[in-house]
Length: 307
Image 1 (cartoon, rainbow, N blue to C red):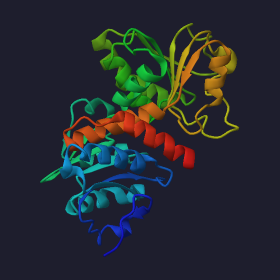
Image 2 (cartoon, one colour; image 1 turned 90 degrees about the vertical axis):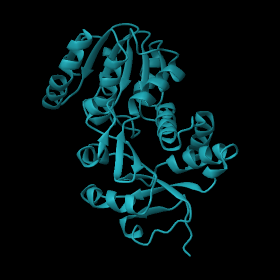
Image 3 (cartoon, one colour; image 1 turned 90 degrees about the horizontal axis):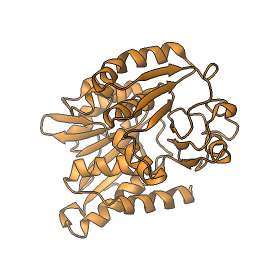
Image 4 (cartoon, rainbow, N blue to C red; image 1 turned 60 degrees about the vertical axis):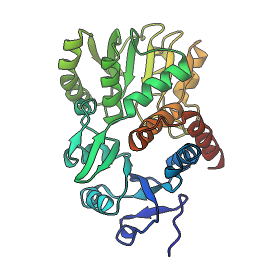
C-alpha cells in the first residue's frame, strides 16, 4: 500500500490510484508547493479528534493541479471520496460555474475557495471575506463596519475583500488600482451592491490619488510585497498618518507597505490570521464543528518558521 504524506505535493497523475484508508481533504492550486494549509488543517483535525474520534482518520493533502486540468480533476476528486477541497489561485473563478450549488454569500464574489462533497457533486463556498474580517479584528483590533475602507488592487482577492467591506457596512469604499480597465469592470460590478447599501464607492489610480484619509483602514490585495525589491502599491508620500494597514501577504511577515505605514504612526498586520481563519471556516463547513483557530495559528507559525 502506498504511503500518504501531508508533506508530499501530489498531482493529477496520483489521483486514479488514490486509496487513502480514511477521509481525504485537499488544497488544489498552481503553484501549491509552498502551501502551509496541510500542517494547519492536520493539526486542527488532531485536536478535534480528541473529542470527536470519528475525525481521527481525516487527513488534509495538497495537489498541484494545472488550471486547464481543474474541470477534469473535480469529478475525480469526488469519485475518490474527497470530503472537502480548498482552491487557491487560479482555481477559485474556474470552479465557480462547475460546482452544483453556490452558497448565497459566495454568489456576488463569482469565486469559490471551499468545496464540500455531496452525493451528486460539490457545493461551493467562499471563506476569504470571513478570514479578512477576522484578520482585521485580531491583528488591528478594528471592525470593517463604519470604517473608511481603502482597498489596493482589483483582482480576485480584491473583489472578495470589496464585497466583504460592503456587506460589513463600511462607511466608504475606495479602490485603488494601476490597471484602469480592470478597475472600471470591478467598480461596475460592485456599484449595485454599494447603491443598495447606500455606501459611497470611489475608484482611483495610484498615480493620481491625493493623500489618503487619516485613520483609514488600508487593505493590500495586490501581490506587491512578496519580493524584497517590490515597490509599495501606492507612493509612500500618499500614505496617511495613523492608518491601519492590513496586508494580505503573510510571507514575508512584513512588507515595504507595512513598514512605511508604521513609520507614519500607523498600525499594521499581515495576512496570516486571514489564512488561518478562512481555513478554520472551511474546516467548520466540512466537519460541522467549530475549528480550533488557535491550534491552526500555532501550526501555521511553526510551518512558516521551518520553511
